[in-house]
Image (cartoon, rainbow, N blue to C red):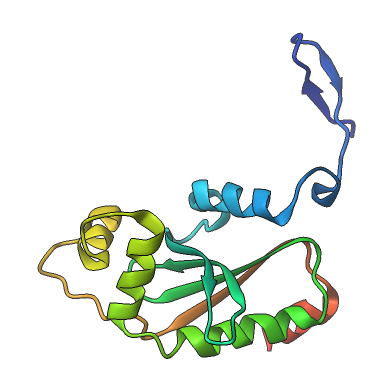
Length: 160
């Protein structure tokens, strides 16, 4: 089956597949995901609370988020195929995030967003939750790898 797209002049032209890595940098993928998390996470909404979050090992988490239950979400982005090191990298980030208290998550959120409200208040607004409903932050961590191609080694390790 042939695929078509519409050019700037309104004409249908054959669709040309391209590699994301040829036209964009990882920064561009961060912006795309940061601005449109609902397109990447079908079953759950994620509130992005940090970008390029520095860890205790002086490495950087691409994106850090919170789901509606207060669980942290570590997002690692690769604009090409995932190398084997990706699993070690995201586990390293998870070991850092696991030790964060609410107060530290709140600082990350404030540094990133510039919001005056607390993470808890903003979270209630963002997820439209009942203000009487108390959220326990960082009880669980979700790890997400976004890439143009997930290698079979990464897929197998992630499924384990």
